[in-house]
Image (cartoon, rainbow, N blue to C red; front, side, top):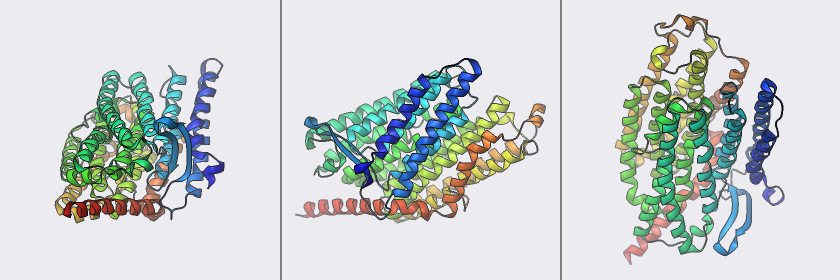
Length: 504
């Protein structure tokens, strides 16, 4: 395979570090230096994206196993290896990371002058860590990338965020640290049992039901906070509202998928009996999150917080899809993770455009912008419709598949998902009407400039992806199909074997 001759995944992890090196060597003064820093970071992210396209064109959709695989001894005596690879569950999220990074850099073009070099270094470091998260097969390696991704995020929010940035960054750090420490204990337990942390080795373990439940709860603490699942969600609105626009793009577009991906890659395959035993509790939490977050979103006056609570509701839908563990629900959850990342990142970009011009993202400060910003009105409309899963936009096919999968588990769960769609339409359409067609509350809004070429360049790929996923979802579902089928079969076989042993 290609990975034997060309370490593509390692190169995708390493390229941002080359960009960081170039940023550290940047010289000059004033605007010349700032322009050099911006262009260097953007060029590095674009080269990484161009290289990542080899994953799209070289991936064999008919195969369920790992592709572009790399495996080298790292700590051989401890059973830890440098094992990288992508399958249908992960390949598109590597691509999503490389797409979002240059968009986030463009969104940050004029966001800061103080510490711009450090800001761009944090962005490229985040890209490297996220590619590693979605490529690591060894659990120790995954943990290092997963934990490492929090360092640049903490800095981006804490150093370049809004007035409440320090509190938001500390809250994010404390929430995630507790969960990560519990997961580390679970990883050490698995290592003692298997003598290895490679996922392919760990899947051979025969764990008792109580052991699976305790270990799953430790992983739940780490991944549930990252998604975030109710009631461990309260860090998210603070982080999203305080992060600079580029940071919000990466948080909503990519990082929010880390928890869901962790469940799908590690927790669900490793602990099938625990998933079966605890899924009613998780479904209950997910439905509460869907309805609660939707109702809270309706009461928000800060546009960033409104979109953040909307994201919590959507992640509740994804949670249902993951733990229903069927071909339809898992495919829908994966497609929803992809489309939600695109649409939510785009919504934060829209709010960022307004904040750059009006210096606020308070909802009651806007109104009547449609005449002054017709191009922005059209873009905002597209992503608003995507957020409420209008047919033809990206969220629609994913949510429909999750509803079908949830119906097989319980019609009441499916009803909870449909409720969120109705409530989502209420608050998102109110947001759009208030900003674009509401009463003009500030005379200076009449003179706001429409989208600049840089902003058009930010929105164009996200608009294309939103329509592409909505109109032709099978081009993305094809990547998932073989790996999802293998995971579902694996879960069914594990539960059937347990049932046979229980009957002896």
